[in-house]
Length: 236
Ligand code: FPP
Image 1: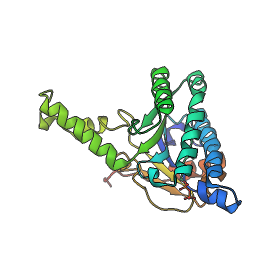
Image 2: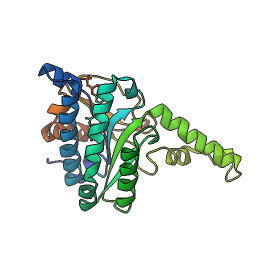
Image 3: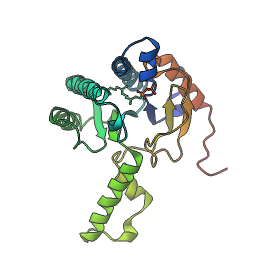
Image 4: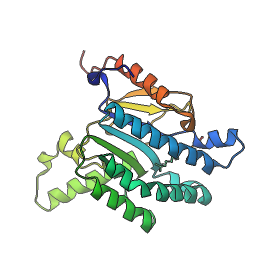
């Protein structure tokens, strides 16, 4: 990867799409696609940390994904349960882990593991890996709006104190910077309610590769494309 540090995005978001199609193409149940996708998640998260990307967010489960058949949802929950046991590994690698979204609907074992990983990795600041789980961009904004309303109604601040910066800090991503680059494999061209506030000025990279086939070379291609983009943020 021959991209200089200043041309690397600070925050990359991945929409891990195409697991189901990957499995179907092989005559396997969809859950096998998610299993393969989870391995890719681990590899890509490690690579991002190695090359010096500071913030990485993976869309693992949306607020809408609960509508999937119960056996697929259960298989995904089993996968999360198992992967969250890697807490020791994250701590050893000095990676901060955060979970974006309301944790309440998850089973107790998953909730406890999420809270414990967040607690154990809180102090690390060289790389932050965020897993969006039960996440929706609109839900994120509504949640932040409720918190802002509470702060005003409790007299802690006035409505004039609500600025873009302040409001952004109330989102699940807290003080993480806005997303610079969104990568969506699998040939779909939409944001699907992923970090809609945080992606206001993001660059997008789409590819036809299905997520379980996504490799570090695909990521290198996306980073190279990003490094050639001319970002103007509304200026000229
Ligand atoms: C979308 O592909 C993918 C998901 C809804 C789940 C993503 C989850 C993982 C990759 C597992 C992550 C695991 C951990 C531990 C973080 P799809 O099922 O919609 O694929 P399709 O469009 O081909 O049907």
